Image (cartoon, rainbow, N blue to C red; front, side):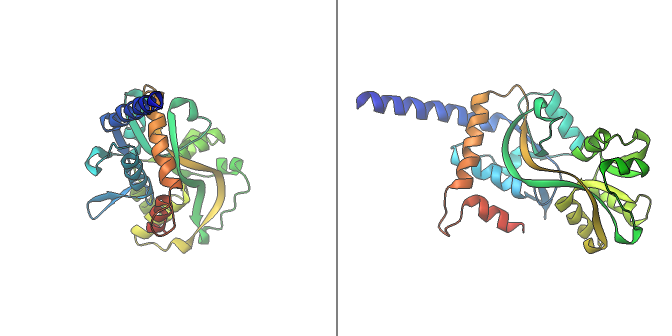
Length: 252
């Protein structure tokens, strides 16, 4: 009995030490609603809320001011090259999987090619995209999928943010945008366009978004964060739903 108590204390102490290290990590994200974005100066979204809730579960609270909002390409490259970074919300692909350690998932996702319904564009396969000029965010999964599909580099027009791409779509300077569907439609609405005027002409992939961690981060710390997320997704709250379900309902 005494041995069991001592062992339990050691395990709890070990978990706490590792959990406490969460606040030593640097958390990077971009404007990618509904997963992560600023509204009224406050950072929020499914990925933000889940991260904070998970950190609370493992007794290492992460504060909003510890999360930096940056352009995607900068944050992505920093997480590849630097130590102790956590980047979200990151689509997990075969190409990216060996580059990071992964915690999640945050949510299901799908990367699509969007075009104005009035354009009459028809795409039957990813190969058909070779015949079009297509917009994507630099270093986003959309750019990577276009390259994997064999779309010539000269046909891939890269932007640094979604707002600038929406303006090009609006002005008919580009016909197709490859991006995460929910995020793309959020930006269309934000910029005063009717999302219903745009249609998915092709689905490039259906996947999930995760927290991508720098390769140097200790596996034990990865497990601690994963444990927190698992608890948020499984433990019931007073309303009979999990905390994760309550988070999702905020952004529907």
